[in-house]
Structures are given as structure tokens and as C-alpha cells.
Length: 115
Ligand SMILES: [Zn+2]
Image (cartoon, rainbow, N blue to C red):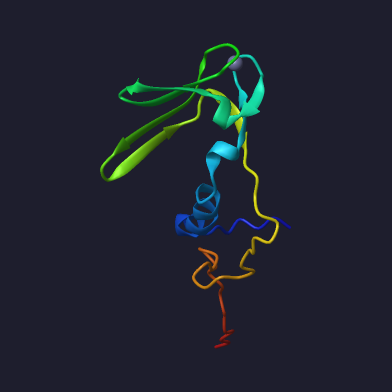
């Protein structure tokens, strides 16, 4: 059986908050251009652009861009194939947090009426 129900995007808040609460400079990234895997802390960051531009230490291609405004931020990771983020072992995941019920669970409770 395939379950086509989904949760609304608000449920991403917890997982994303968990992800971005860690120190991303301790993460490891893979350069999309040359394939080099290196800690984010080793990237070459240029801060005199309209934001931060982080380049691969091997091939100098852009791996990450971060632009910050007073009320928002833009994170562009197009130059990175992945970011591997070390996570604490004792991080707990809520089994069934409130407010994450499947959307579209419309069940019919049909009552048979005969005549
Ligand atoms: Zn590279």
C-alpha cells in the first residue's frame, strides 16, 4: 500500500531548527566542481561581496553563498553536492509531536440507508 497523505510544511520547523542549531563550520562539504570533500571551516570565504561567498580551497569554485538582511537570510548551496553535519548522539526525536497530523485524512463514515 502507498500512503499519499502528507504533513504541512510547519512540521519542518523542528528538523530544520535542529539542523541549523549546530555549528555548520564543523560540517563537511563536497565541492560540486572538483569533488573535493573538506570541512566547511577550510573554505575560503570572501566577505567583500554583497554577502559571504565561500569558495573551494582546491578549485576556487563557489560552494556556498550567504546573504543576510536584517529580517532574513538567503543560503545558496548550489556549488556543494552535500553538507555532512555531525549530530549529537543523544539528540532526541519526538515520536509523535502534537500538531503533525496527516493532511487529507478524509475518512468516510458511510451509513447505509436502505429505503
Ligand atoms: Zn572544488
